[in-house]
Length: 447
Image (cartoon, rainbow, N blue to C red; front, side, top):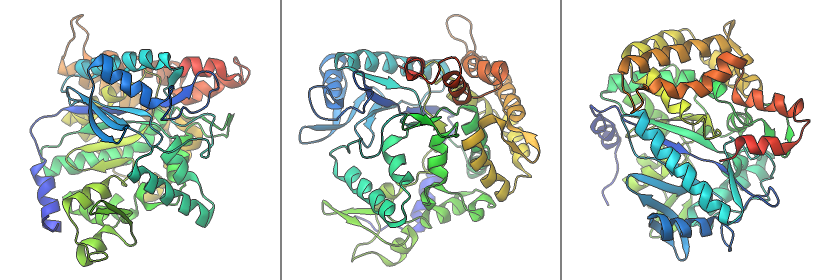
């Protein structure tokens, strides 16, 4: 296999520029056993594997990755079902230029997985962090790479007592949105805007207020875990934050990240140093390849990830009726040049210190946080209005004459109607009307 170089990495980004402006969505969710509110197992008659088998037998999903009897990935059409660290099912949808098509694909997935899962007494929650279980209670998927990663996180926990990285691996669920770029300038502007407004987007859609059956004063516990696990793979240092966000800046940042795993001759190797050092000097007699780079990018857990697309990863999983609001809002902001320029001007004066403080604040206080004296709730409303105007301008209608802004209505009911994020509303209901009873919480979150 040919040896990898920095020039080839940059050429990859250049060749990924495309005229289309399609979007893809990836949706994770938390699985629970209906009888115990405990995490399901992967194996057994009533586990995730049984659900996957039924999807194969009855609904036309094809197995595309398998280890022995264990299913690791399935596909149907342009959509993919990937498995999380414990075997949970994630939808990775196909690319769409219409929100109507994207939402339809998600709703089909939502309905069929929910119905099949009921056979086995498993239900799904649209929430960003497991509300009940500990790390120890959640088993690992019997797949070698994921077991290696779990051991990596466990070793870090033993070293410094911080188990947040392992918690991220086992207990979080998010919504990821993928964007195309048509040039390096477009790539830089989109990635810069997405990085710098990512705390605001996290706050708008925050939905992870519970951990181990209680509220720990974080409306976004998933964000708290991501920002406080002591791993550089989750952080944006001042160098990338203050860069031009072009191809070279991102490549330098990617190469500065720790090299975690290599797979050579069907053997997994735990590594030291950075990927850049590996690219320059090799490791244990091995030279860097594209497969190594692909594997390295799978340990890039930041709120924004770049490759052939720009991937936003900062948003909590949500109840299914709220999920379409995420791609709708992002499409209106990122794929409309005027809206993107307005966002670019908004962030221009925010320092790296402002950004880091805002990340910490939104995990605890959501939309009640502020930046440079301005409340996030007001900025959030402006961004939603901006997105809505863009989507209306596009005039992409469904059969009923509704444009794509119709999908913003669910999140608008929270941000404009209640003045809070879904997570803020959820914990307020739990503490008052629901008297700290989790059954209404589960009912509201359930697929």
